[in-house]
Image (cartoon, rainbow, N blue to C red):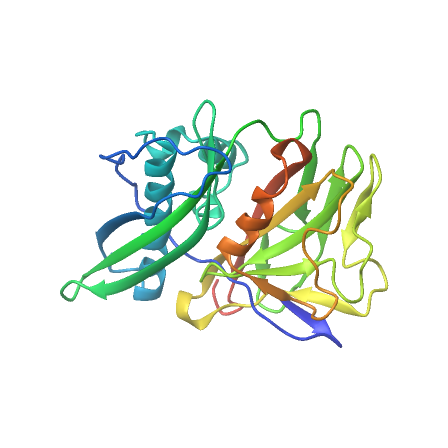
Length: 290
């Protein structure tokens, strides 16, 4: 997604195909809320399909490694199809990759979020990649905001390159709203609130469009040349019902960048009962792609 107007430009693109992941074979001790975890270490190697680029497969490996690291930390050995995040994605008709960069993995009484990570990707011959991955996982208990519902949607499911994008946000109860666009490399850009639209406080039952009517900027659909003529992009909405300070600030830049770890470290400071997270995806196609 690229802003147009008097704003700093930036692109946020996701385009990958996630291969089925095997269940994790080993499990560490179950982590506890508020306790700093030891590093989870693992390696994932996968074949590169003929129709996928190295850049795409690097993100596939990273998503799979993140999932396995959280599974080990939370202390469960289940396939990805049984996680809450995958159930939600399937129920919403979303592709599996929409949860991979910013997922939470649940057991009955714990949830895990990556708070620090490092990784190295290497080639294994001409047609396979391997990732050496390490992560620390923060854990928490409890449920997301009970009785609170929120939605994030775009005015189209599929866009041609350079089309304008409008986002609709609706909440059932009062909350502060934060909208991120998620790039292929896992970097999140906070697109709302921003230095033009600072008011992210929604009242009960509010529904708004972003950008608002008459705003001096717009969002356009952009393709990343590394990932082909047809790509998927993700929007993430974080809804905070607490009365504390702003969770994320962007008054100094239009699209302030956050890493996976930075966002999760902020979320772990907020009780899960006071927040919720919603994801939405759409396709972007080249104008030459019929």
